[in-house]
Length: 209
Image 1 (spheres, rainbow, N blue to C red):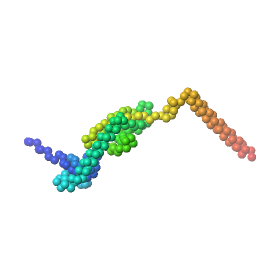
Image 2 (cartoon, rainbow, N blue to C red):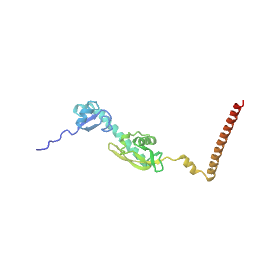
Image 3 (spheres, rainbow, N blue to C red):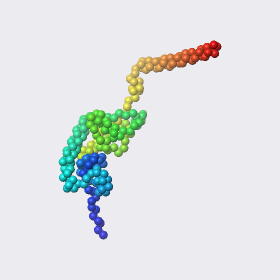
């Protein structure tokens, strides 16, 4: 018996709302008929690509296409700047084994990009398979339409300010710091003894009034 020919595997719709899985507003995309019929069309998230809607949305689709092209060009320029600076640097606290106390995700990366270059990047365009967990140099995939790049992300450990200060101190300064600590401890003990002595005298006076 001949196999039945598969028909209508996908249909074309015009998105009326941004969808991170499908595309941007007024973009023409292919979707499965069931998804269009059960989700997109009844919720007015999209309309069918037919002669009527093709005419009605022509100007909006043209403007949206120009906007996407401009956005893609801006991303190309961004990556040229990143390449000039070699990578995106992110500083995080880490233990002695270089494991991060807080994992780095897409939001951290786009926040770093915005802080350095002042450019907004949607987190879903960063294609991390899993969060970054250690001090290391990573190549992180990025994808927007035809723009497919890799962002070099260098995660560095936050310096221990106390350790850095101690390392920069001379031998004499370290001796002075130790002497100072000892003097402080001695002063605290002396103050405690004086307080106890005063409390004892006060109790005796109350007793023999």
